[in-house]
Structures are given as structure tokens and as C-alpha cells.
Amino acid sequence: METQEFTSMPRIGDKAPEFKAVTTQGEINFPADYKGEWVILFSHPADFTPVCTSEFMTFATMEDKFAEANCKLVGLSIDGLYSHIAWLRSIKEKIEYKGMKDVEVKFPLIEDITMEVANKYGMVQPNEDSTKAVRAVFFIDPEGIVRTMIYYPLSLGRNFDELYRVIIALQAADEFGVATPADWRPGDDVIVGPAGSCGTAEERMTDSDMDCKDWYFCTKKLDKDTVLEKILKK
Ligand code: BEZ
Image 1: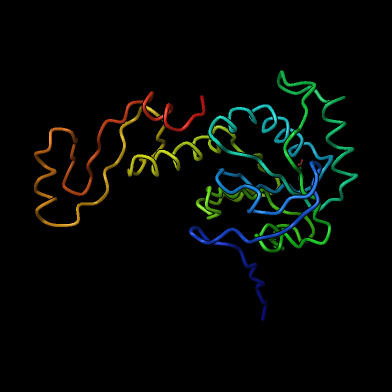
Image 2: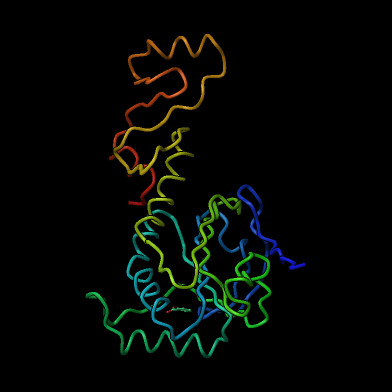
């Protein structure tokens, strides 16, 4: 009988597993060093590979945009520090792609030859590849709690507009006590939390601040500037 190996991984709502690691920006103590900030911890399969290079150039180009949303970036692959350094130097010195050139990756890239961190986060998925991390993305909040996870296979480069949308939507949900509907972007209507009683359900249907399709599906306006002023650092 064929056996299937299962990889352990954190779940949404769990504390982000702790680790200390060597990175291209010095040692980090995770997630303690990021207390009070959002952080995107992400893995890539290998240095000196084309999809990963396109992703790193995109992330590095967007780093300031994420920083405005109080969000730091931390990368990881199962490569050594000198490989990381050489790859990041090559990106800056040699690679021009989609109008991006002279791109300096300033965020930390973790060396994880032992796979200690990758295994803690379920980044190695053996049926995809047993020695390379998949393209995992963990969104971790200022209290060190995992709030969203997205996994992509080796062949599929990530959508960075979506990663940015997730960071803004998570913070908007926290700040304004709402949920965000499909494809939500700042300025779109938001979802009001579920009615907890028959009375509230009835009141909602006549509340002029809400648009209720039915008692369980009510939206309200949330102005784009209000969202962005709250979330983005001046
Ligand atoms: C890439 O980044 O190009 C890549 C890495 C591993 C497997 C396939 C593609």
C-alpha cells in the first residue's frame, strides 16, 4: 500500500513558530524582532533560478510600499549565505526585467541549509520537491500570530498585487471591525459582521447606513481615504 507523508505546518490563528537564523542582513530572532509590525515570511525554491529572480525583483521594488503599510519582508530558501549573497549581487548587477534594473534586495534572506525553519513552517512539501521549499507566504501580525497563508508550487510565480491586497485587507478588517468581500480593494463596500440575534437581524433590514441583500448579507460604505489614512504611515 502506498503511504502518504504529511508535513506539519502552522495554521491560521497559531503563534508563528519561533526561530533564530542567519540572513543576508545579519541574525534575526523571529518573530520577536518584528513585534509591533506585520511581516510577510516567504520561501522560494532556490537561488539563481528565473521565477525566483523575477519574484525577488518584484518584491524588492515593492518593499517601500509594504513598509508604508507597516509590513516587513523576510525571505528564505534552502541555500547557504554565500549563495544568497552571490545571487542578490547578480540580480543588482546583471538582471534587467520588465523595466526593473539595478534592483537591490534590502530585506533579509534566511539561509536554511538544515531546513530547520522550512520544516517548522511546512515549506518543504515532498511530493512537490523534497529538497526545495515551495513558494509559501505567511502573513504574520504585530502580535506574532499567523493570519493568512498562501502556497504556490515551484512553477508558479506569485501575484504581488494580491500579496499587497491581503496585507491591506487584513489590517482594514482589524481596524474597522469588518470583513472584506471577494476581490475587495480599498474604497469598495465592506461586510458587516453577522447578526447575533433575531432583533439585530430585523434592525439591519431597515438600517439606512447598511445595504442588506438579506439579513445575513449586509454591506456598508468604507471610504478609501479613511482606510488608507489609518493603515499607511505618513
Ligand atoms: C524558478 O524559480 O525558476 C524555479 C525554481 C525551481 C523549480 C522551477 C522553477
